[in-house]
Image (cartoon, rainbow, N blue to C red; front, top):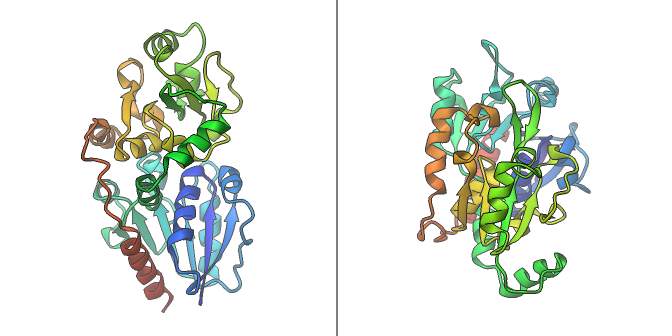
Amino acid sequence: MLNLIFHASEAGIASQFEAIEKILDKKEFELSFELFGSAKKILENRHIANFENADIAICGFDKISQDNTSVFLEKVREKKIPSIGILDTWKGIDRFFNLDTIRDLPDLLLVIDNLSKNYLVKQGIPESKITVISDFALEYFLKKFDSRKDKEVIEIKNKLRIFDKKPLLVFFSEPIVLPSGKNSSLARLALKEQNDLSKTLNDKYGDKFHLLMRLHPLDGSINLKGWHNINFLSLFESLSIADKVVGLSATPVYYASRLGIDIENLENYLVKWHPSMSNIPSEIWEVIKINYQTDPNRCKFIDKEKILATRLSKIIIEMAK
C-alpha cells in the first residue's frame, strides 16, 4: 500500500481532494492531510499528515502572499518524497509567477485542460513538467448529478424550508480586487441594497424564483434582504437544486454550465469589471465564457471516473518507483 500525503489551503483544491478520495482504491492507497484555511473546514476529520511514511506528496497551490505550498514542497523534497501538484482552475493561474520568477514547483503538475497547459508553457513553465488529466470534482459532480433522485432534491429543499414548486436561482459569489487594490467580492458589488445591479436582479428574478446566494469563504458574513444564504449546503447540493445560476468567473458557475444549468453571466452588468479583478487572464476568460452558453447536449454524461482513477493511480505508482 502506498501512503499519500495531501496539502491544501483553499476550497477549490479541497473539493478536488474530496473527489480523489472517492475514486482511489482504498486497498492500494492510504491518505493523510496537511490542511489550512477553508480547506480545513471542507476536509475536516481527516488523518493528519504523516510525512515520515509518505511515498508521494500531492498539493494544491496557495496564493504567493501566504505560500504554505512552498514550505510543504521544501519539506517533502528534503525527505526525497516525489511530488505532484494539481491546478484545479484557471482562476489564480498567475500564482505560479512572482515578478520575473517562477515559484517552487512540484515534480509533476496536473492541470484540467490544454487551455491551462498552453498558458503555463507560454509563461515559461517547462512542458515536460505538465500533464493534462481532468477536473476530478467536475467528473464526480457529473456522475452524481446524472444519478440524483427527485427525493434527494426535495430533502435539500426541505433544509431550506422551501416547500413549493417555485424555481430556485443560486448566486455564486467570488473574491474581486477593485482597481484601487481593495479586496471586495461579487456579492458585495452585486447584491448590496441601493445597488443598481441588485435592483435589476430583484426586478428580473424576484417574483419568478426563490433567490439563494452561496458566499465565498472570503466573503465573511453578508445578510441581504430577499436572499437566502445557503452556505450550510455542500457545493454539490447547491448545484443540484439550482434551476438557474447567476455569477461571473467562479468555478462553480462553470460547473453549472457543464451540468446543463441555465447561466446568467454578470459581466455585461459590471461595466467596470475586468478579468484581472477576478484573478483570471483575459485570454483565458474569453474562452471560458463561451462555455456558459446554454447547450442542451452539454450535460450528456460519460462516466470517466474509472478512467480517471486508473490514470491517476498509474501516475502515482510510476512516480513512487
